[in-house]
Structure formats: C-alpha cells, structure tokens
Image 1 (cartoon, rainbow, N blue to C red):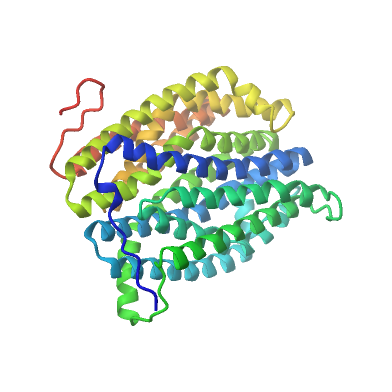
Image 2 (tube, rainbow, N blue to C red):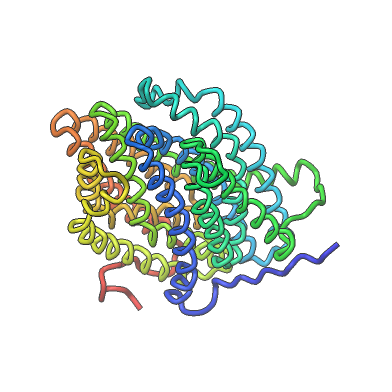
Length: 460
C-alpha cells in the first residue's frame, strides 16, 4: 500500500495578491477552454439552422442545472478538503476525496434516470413547441447518458484544486476542448467516413470529450496525489464525510442551480417572442459566461484559499484576499461593459446570420453587461462564504436574487417594455444582490481586518 502524499497547505504563505493571481491564471485557461467548449457547439449547431440553434438553447438551462449540481458537490468537496489540508489532517483529506467521488456516482445515477423519463414534459414547460421537441430529444437522450462524465470529473478537479494545484485541472479541461473541437464537425456534418448526425452528433462529441476528463482526473487523484483509498472504513465514517460535504455542497448546489432555473424562467418568457429570440438569448447566455471568465476563475480559487487560511487561523490573509477579489470584480465589469458596448453586434454575428438572432443577442449583452461588475461581487461573495463554511447565507442571497428581484422584475418588464424589460431585470437584480452580498461578506468574515475596497482606503 502506497503512503498517502503529505499535502502541505500551500496557500497560507507568500504575498496574497500574487498567490491569487498565480492560482487564477491557470483556471482562466481552463474556464476559457470550457466556455469555448460550449461556444464551439453553438458555432457548429448554428450552421445547421436557426431551429437547431433554438433547440440547443432550450437545453442550456437544463444542462446548467446538472452542471450546477456537480459544481455544488465540487465546492463542498473543495471547501472541506482545503480546510483539512490547512489543519494538516492527511487521513481526512484522503477519506473526503474518496467519499466525495462515491457520492457523486450515486447522484449521477438518480439524475440520469429522472432526466431520461422527463424530456418532453420538462421542455414543453420551458416553452418548447412541437417543431423543436424532436430536435431536443435527439440531443438530450445522448447527453443524459453522458451525465457521469460531467459530474464526476468536476468533483475530482475540485479535489485537485483544494491542494493548491490549479494547473492540472486547467490542462484536463483543455484536453476536453481539443477533443470536442475535432469531433464536432466530424459528427455533426458527417465529414469523411463519419455519419451525419447533426444535433445527435453534437451531443455525442460532448459525451466523448467529457469522458477524457473523467479518465484523466481519476488517474491524477489516485496515482499522483494518492487521494483515493480502496479501504472501507465503515458506513459511519462514509456518512460523516458525506455530511460534511453536503453541508456546504447542497446549499452551494442550490445557489448554483438558481442561476439556470432563472435562465429557464427567462427562456420561457423569451419564447413568447419566437424561436429566433430564444436562439439569440441562448447565444447571449454563452457569451456572458465567456465575458465573466476571470470572475469565475477567481471565484473557483478563492474557495481553497479561504479554506486553507481559515484552517490555519490566518484571518488577515483572508481579509486581504477578499478586498482584492471584490475590487477586481468591479473593475473587470466596467472593462467588459465598455467592450460589449462597441462590439456586441459583431460578436453576435459570429454564431448566426439571422437578423433577429443578432439583434436579441446584442440587446441582451449591451443591457446586462452594465451590471457585470455587480454580478462579479455576487458570484465572488458566494464563493467566499462557502470557503468560510457559511453556505446558507450564500444560498439565501441567490434565492433573493431570483425570487425577490430577477423573476418579478422580468415579469413586470416583459409586460411594459417587452424584451428590453426582461433583460433590464437581470441588470437590476445584479445590482441589488451585489449590495446585499457586500454587507453579508463583511459581517461573515472572521476578526482580523477591515473591508474597504475603494482604492486608497484600505487599512494596512
């Protein structure tokens, strides 16, 4: 039996800002890769036609729900693992990794069965009509079979990141992107000896690409990191691990799931304006994720950073990391807004030439991007709270954003201003929730610092 690798708390020493930047840059590469993964699908499916693009846009909120569940499990695993690493408890590190992966397998099985049985009623509820339902079925029947290749690697990569290694998960994600880029045109359009499968081909390419991430992440965790054990400690210890992971993972998953649920509700509202508008909204949703890549990357690495320093009792480092993160979110949001203000229409035309699709995509990006800095504060705030092992406030903020601000504003805006009103609701919800997030983070942080993020006012 190999000896467990001793995982040193790498994130509790050195300059805070430099540490966060060093961790974030590889994650940017990885997240850009995964966003590019989705944009590649959007690009090639857009070449099939507007109806095919609309069908795939309907699947986006459902796929995001499954991915958000995986993200929640990953956040729970990363938070408790990083805390254990900060404490220096190496047996606990190994146990939590193994039990986290086992838990993800059980959840995968349930979601695969439920998804396959509810394709038509679910998508009709989202506003899909008779002509798009067959196309949606083509895509989702294959995608659901590949759900294990989505959830398990996300949990595995989160475990790797908890050790302070963000380069390996980024490399794993890039492998999937390359595989998808190669397979998409071959399977969608039937190039060379391959059959023309259209939407089924896009789904199959996704499943095969994700399968590579499953294999590689398990190999890294078991062979290089020795974080997986085949010892059976008894159900009591396994349940204890699951309890710790789910205490953070379930609220984190709920927080993450609320975003695609809101997208699903908005998709239903947008569907009243026609399939071209749904297609445009679907494109805009993917471009938005790309625009927020740096925020998403920083949000991913702030969890193990906060967790390790919390476990080591280094509260002043947590404060410094939080101040840097929130200030960066606001500055990045301003930069993206200015960029999209001038280039939103050109970006929209890359994916589809239909004027209605281009108009909808550009309209969304210009209106909502004014609030991307605020959305960054909200997203980072959720990650910070999870790293502090306070998942319930993060979940509460997400619920408030959706049910108090976003959905009511979208319903009202749709009645008064049409599509513009729906999109403006997203911006208003982002601003309101960012303000709440800031004050909640300030209250939740451990003693040892002052949270002033206006340049020149930080306490030294």
